[in-house]
Amino acid sequence: MKPLIYSISLFLTIVLFLSCESTFMEPDPGTSNRDIFNEYTNIVKQKYAMLEFKNVDIVELQSKIGATITENTTQAELFNALGSITLSLRDGHSTIQKEDTLIGYDFTEGYPPGFDIEILNNNYIATSTNSQMNRITAEGDEEIIIAVYGNLPQDEQLAYLRIPSWDVIITDEQIENIFASFANAKGLIFDIRQNTGGNPVLATKFASYLTNDVVFIGEERFKTGPDANDFSNSKAFLKPANSEVRFTRPVAVLTDRYCYSASTTFVASVNPLERVTIIGQRTGGGSGSVGDGYLANGWKWSLSTSEFIDYQNNNLDDGFDPDIPVLLDLQTTDKDEVIERAIMELQ
Amino acid sequence: MIKSILISFFCCFMCIVVTDAQNIVGAESNRNSFFLSLGSTNSSFQDVKYSNVKYSGLLVSFGLGYNSNSIKRIWELGLQANISRETASTYDNGKATMLNPIIYFTYLKPVNKTFYVGVRIDAVDLYIRSIEGLGNNGSYLLNGSHLYGTAMVNVDLSKSLKLQGTVNIGLLSYQKEGTSFAYFAPQNVLESEVFDYQDQAITNIFGYKYFELRNITNNLNIRNGIHLQYKKMSIGYDWSLKYFATVKSYPVTIGIHNIVLRYRF
Image (cartoon, rainbow over all chains, first blue to last red):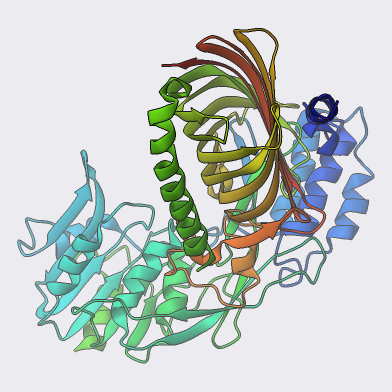
């Protein structure tokens, strides 16, 4: 009798549990115009980390713009309504995308160019100008430059390193080789102009070659829950690279308005170092970490879900002012004023 | 540390069982066999931290392993991989690919002729989803090891037809979810008051530093199955459920169904 009871009990248990995960799941969200509007504005309200810093009253926007959303609202009008909320954040990381159409804030608008590749190539780093300059290119595509490094013809005791993007793959060995080649340099010009970001881990790895000490660089405040005060207060430190070839002599970091996201992480990481001087243009900012997802109608959102407060208590999302502001003069094509100012500083 | 203890426990357990099994192989070699399995997987997923939209899809599962059956005990060591291609319930873009390899071990002792109890250990249970079109949240990672309490009924329907039903209830899990409330880093990392981009354990799926121990009260983990065996072939239906929340009120639900054909060599 007992085996039969065991058997019946077990099979009943199995039948009870079969396919029941749907009972644990929340119901699908609605996809009406109002549902989509509410879903997006709630995501902004709960996940966007800088409503206070950007002075955005999301509840008021929900109410004001929401009043115009009805079931007669066209998809284009609804998309523009969500886009207006996105633009109110003034944040290049925050976008709303419908198929091939994207609405996002242009953080470079109103800023003059701070970089010209022709001027740089013709006067400093092109192989024809400077045979000592080395290049690391992407595997399988030599057109994609990962790093340019070497000595400058204007002063061979000064090293130059250009990283055009942090969204690249570079090995630890390659990074070691770069810094090993700077062993005899009295100063380093670290050019990250036009570097719109990528992997903050890589940016921090390069920064770690510029210090011998653990340095407090600020706090990254991540959203950890839906309420307005649900933030982490995560202290951030720059730790020295585990390397013999760290560069601990004076460094000039060159910036322009296109320095964004992971480049701001890099600047925030090296700015506390006394030997480092930031030269050029105000950076683009974008100091928050980014989360993304889809709304219930398939439109894609991305938002800054953290804010970075540097060691001097500055929120860096709107940009970082250089120690020495320098504008590029596009009329004089025989020199890059930002590099020239850095050479002067390091000499 | 806890991971090391679990792995040590698993290894010791394996040594004892394999030693035991060698004795059984001599006496009852006809009841020890390698097996291969092939079937279909139907998976579903919902992470309320990001959306209430459910994902579900179908593809394939396969497995291999070694099974030992004796009067005194049943044990099985196996690898199973579930793969599926999921679609969101309310839109067509942003499809997801799910990969779920599991290395498991089951050990059961008979209570009587038909009823067995024991444990199952999922030494590795890796759940990876890749979502098209997304950036930082384009991957969802859940890596863990689990200890289950197991009950099995083995009924001989005829001389060559056997029905087997199994219930595994997760008792302990040691796991790491790669995504937090709003960012691609574990929630416990963000709540630890220090965030270090140079800390590779944050993004490394095997970064044990941020694994956490969860139990049946905060991590529902169930695996059930019914298998009908005819001589060397069996057909079975397995179902697993994971339901947990690293952020309060924002649960993750994962369901995986398999219909599998198994052949014992």
